[in-house]
Image 1 (tube, rainbow, N blue to C red):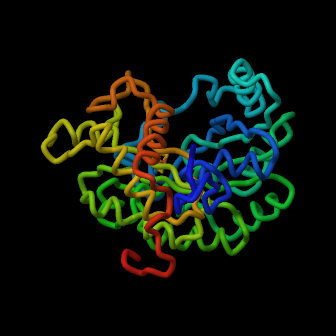
Image 2: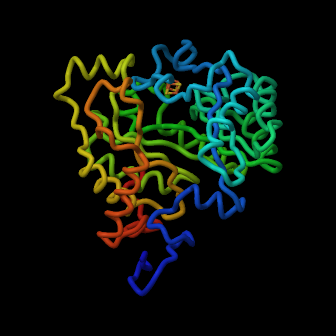
Length: 331
Ligand code: SF4
């Protein structure tokens, strides 16, 4: 039985749930009264960090093929991708579900506003699709796009996911991200001023930062107006610049063991604001894309089970050590 944080009985925890972390899926179910299933879409956008307008070559870890589902091909319309995504997931969920179109591949605000509107609205016209989640870069959103999305969010679910992977400029530079942390902070604040829901990602285990710095990001992110967070262990994906960097200097990399990662993530969660919803705890690129150490055949859902089991054993929960107003790790 899950117990209250003070041990006096069964939950709920500060977010009103009985799980030991603030689960985004639970928060959505509570708000919308049903399961919301994300369906990935490749809307044919590019990325300014690849086409030369910000940089060339892209982020060192980036190989979009490693996480794009097979039904997402730019030769297919957005509607067709979503219909195939619905069919793909139908066998798993017999009960009724509603869908969020997840604009995942590349930078999904990197086009003129009229083009963005047409693509988002095509998705929103597919039966069962109640909202959109837009993956993009923090330097790819401006006031015009944010104003439009804020208007759209009055009628539909809209979530803006701006991956940063690290809060440290030295790591953003090492990854060839092409923007700094101040840019990311500005983008999150501009979105929040308009009432938009935002999320981000981190990668733990980058050779450009220490474990202590990995961990201190819990404090830094807790002070941003973020709704969601995804965590990933560093994976070396084939056909990336990172694969070459790793092949040249493998001694620079310190990978997490599965056991070490579970405890590390829990330590991180203890310092994270309980208000941030957790969407993912680990990455799982398919084995054929992996060019470095992995967690073997342990899938992300199993990693999550192990984290929850260890949290129960440790009698801890997200935010247990979070102190509002503590500026200790503010970037
Ligand atoms: S990770 Fe995103 S921002 Fe970086 S190169 Fe790939 S698509 Fe562009």
